[in-house]
Amino acid sequence: MMTTPTTPYEETALCANLGRRDGRLLFAGQDTVELARQYGTPLYLMDEDRIRYNCRLYTQAFNRCLPAGSRVLYASKAAAFRQMCRIVGEEGLGLDVVSSGEIYTAMTAGFPMERVYYHGNSKSDRDLAFALDAGVGCIVVDGVEELLALEAEAGRRDARQKVLLRITPGIDPHTYAAVSTGQVDSKFGVSIETGQADEFVKLALGQPHLSVAGFHCHVGSQVFWEDVFERSVLVMMAFIRHIRDTTGYLPEELDLGGGYGVRYVQSDPAIDIPRKIASVAETLAAIARRLSLPVPKVLMEPGRSIVADAGMTLYTVGAVKEITGYKRYVAVDGGMADNPRYALYGAKYTCCNAGRMDEPGDMLCDLVGKCCESGDIIQPQIHLPAATQRGDVIAVCTTGAYNFSMASGYNRLRRPPVVMLQNGRSYVAVKGETLEDLVRLDM
Ligand SMILES: *Cc1c(COP(=O)(O)O)cnc(C)c1O
Image 1 (cartoon, helix red, strand yellow):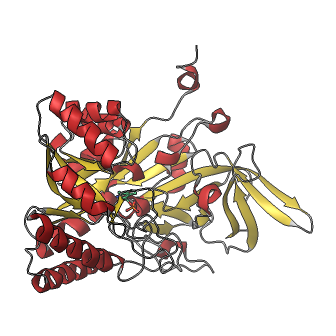
Image 2: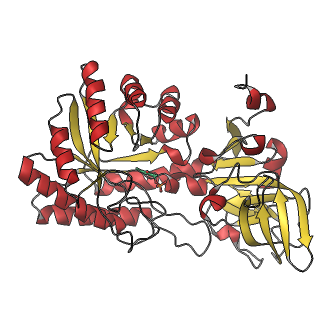
Image 3: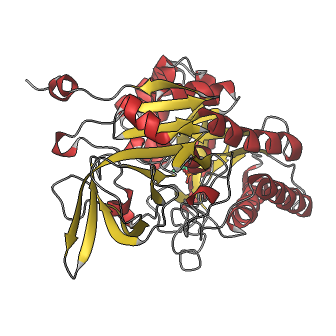
């Protein structure tokens, strides 16, 4: 499917599901200009085969390297809709959810609820009650208040709820500036360094309606550094040993969180997921031996690395505006409402003119949206062919994670449909919003 680029830019080398034919951009082997014509723009495309391929990179490596009962959980916040739940469910993954809305989505998709893990640093009593009634398999408890609220809800139902305890491993934010949810002052979890995690675990072990399966940690997202997960393993295994020595309790499960990075632009490194998992498994086995501990069942929670490169967004150009002597804008029919990631945190993307793949990218421009905000930029300083004009189809690559799920209704733009590509065919997985949908809840 991949062809050798002859243009000065080489977008199609970003991922194996990109290609080109007759000057057109191919995604999952299909002509993107045709797809834009058929479904309209803006349009989210998702490559189902790539999603399944990414799932299997994890599940096969897990089966090879980690103890039986270890499990890959798809972090559904990266892209949460029913068909995603069905696909990852069929691939044997569990599911991470962070809200009643994600629980409801999974439940109504027929996802096996015993494989659902429920996260979040501020679950309300109603959220906890909803999760218990939905039969969520495991609740990842973020702190003492939630622990006591959950004990009360479980007690009222005379249930014994499986939980993991979220621990903050204190991975140094100065060493890993961009990946910071695991540092000591994070809003998530309970810190080892302050001694609070000790108290938290002891309190949890004494709750009659909670069954503590183990510990959870999550260091951050878009992780490329070689040893982040290995460092988490070291810190968490030392904590497990300490807890065993002081309480006699030995956890069955260790959840290492999510976060492997993906390539948005060619200068990003490509991560070899199976090799990474093998390395984490080796570290885990070695440290377990050194600390005379059994190797726990391992959980990982990839979101981005399952869906990011399985996604692409197509737009139609509305205007090419040259401010003589200053700069050029290429404005499209979507923007920060369907992809807020540049506006939020300066995310990088690879963009191209889907119908002019044989023309050199010799025009420097900012790709901007149609929202009433100067910050509505999809990507600044990109190169598109000079002939780019109104009506052309622009593709933004690697939009499968945190685009659809972060979309808003700003300016009353309609959320685009999600169209799945699978083995040469296409089908609608999420319908696009209609004008009627926009006013449906208005009184
Ligand atoms: C966001 C998140 C994930 C998924 O992170 P990715 O970077 O998308 O892999 C997993 N676990 C937790 C607790 C998270 O908050």
